[in-house]
Amino acid sequence: MSEEEKLKAALARLEHSIRKVIETRGYSRETRALKLLSELIQEQLTNGHTRHSTRSIR
Amino acid sequence: MKILVMSLLRLGDFIQILPVIEGLKQKHPDAEIDVWVHAPVSKSLGHLIPSINHWWALDRDELQAGLGRADLPLLTSFDVLREQCDEINHRNYDLIINVTQTRFSAWLLGYLRCKTKLGLGFNPRGQAEFHSPWFRYLDQHADPSVKDVFHYTDVFMYACDLGESERVWNLRPTEKGHEELKALGLPRENVIAVQPLTSDEKKNWGLERWAECLIEVSRRNPECHFVILGAPSERAKLEDLFHRLNGVPFTPAIVSLDGALAVLNQSEMLITGDTSIKHLANAASCQVIELALGPSDHRRTGIYKEGALILSGRTECAPCPHSSPCHQASHRCAENLRPDVVARIIECQRKNLDLVKLARDHKDIALRRTHFLGIGFWYALDLHESWPVTISRWIERSTWKFTLAPKRKGPVPAVGSEAYGIYHALRELHPDGNFQPVLAHLDFLEKDQSRTSSGDQEIFARLKAEAQREKTLDLSRLRSVQTRLESETQARSIRSKIIRTLKSHLAESS
Image (spheres, rainbow over the protein chains, first blue to last red):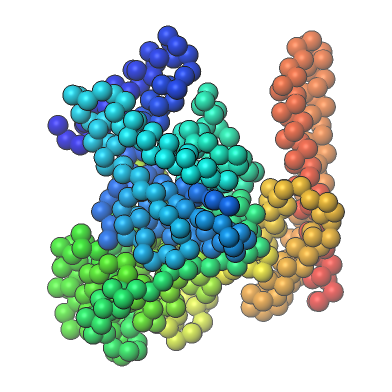
């Protein structure tokens, strides 16, 4: 599994969890935590605009 | 006072906000200024910036590694992040400024505790809070197709109420950099630094074109010695360019940022793509020619130096989005920058020769010269742009400055000085002093202001009448229209005053 595929799988897992938490408990600390992590991945994937934020630098 | 600045993007983005850090230091001399950046940024720059008290490093790789593993609980990475957030919260910052403007950083800012926050943050319900009209402006102007926009450095300076402060890039030369420079054994004079590669293929000009251009520069200027800059990860790619430069005097410089800074300080000029080395040159003494290609948007992130040149190929698709591949059959913006023309531009810049004719002869190349205007913002003046267009943009930016500024008493005299500032900038940069076309354009703008004003009032009256007639008075919608109209009215009043005062200055002088 490539790095990108791993991140896509993790993103799908997170988004599913966010939906479940909102349905059962509404907005909570867990929702924020999950949202934060899903944004972290989206930034890194091609649909985010900080795609190269971890590229190797000097 | 304790201040934290969050900059969770790339190296160049962080270097761009150094004037904010210096401005804060000048405004609050006793303040401890900490930054929160990605781990590679703190590793590369930590020792170069003396004004920063403490570096918090966000290890994105570690967080992502935890998320990609099925054998770990889903919130493991969050626990790592929370630990860092808790440590940050224990520092009890008086002010946290988020200059990142991404959703991830907004969630983080929402999670942090602090009395005063600036920049995009999300509240617990995921609603955006900007904490300053300037950050809202940034959000509203995110689309690459906007007609005009302030440079990011200016936006952040104004957002932190530092708009009038001098822009200072304080990078400390190091012993390590000096040693790397010494090892290169460069000549003392006529050194031209070249940074051919960037992080994004679409921003690259192509090594073949670079070689062709440098060979031509060398033919026309045999005294020049090139130093080709690159990071260790770029070494293999650059070998191709080194082979092509047969017979051209050059030195490869695979150096650290310390070394790159030292090289730039010994070079008379840097020719570069849109990359962190370009931003580093803001702190160095060399002239700069930037090649802004693909997604590179010079208006927001261009070289922030007086008298630098920014070249780009004129295409309707530029600047393109960062993440998607080039949709053209070939890399048109790069192709429009012909190596022989770029070589002539480099020669003109070196020898201080007139570039306007060259700009007129090559309409497929946008040739811009950068200026820091006395009215408090950076502007890249297209040498092919008509003065009425330039003046319209300056007036618009000045209007934004007033409408986004914190409410102050008696703004009228300040508007007068702003108009005088525009007049002064125009006199300084206008080559032939013929202001008649500008005056005619200002007449047009003045008439347009009053026409739009009555149009807006009509729209509001019609909406109100419709709502009352249909007995569906949507108060929130009416209120939002009213707020928009009020801010439009305020902007129009400021714009009109600037136009009238500018007209009278120009009429007096002609």
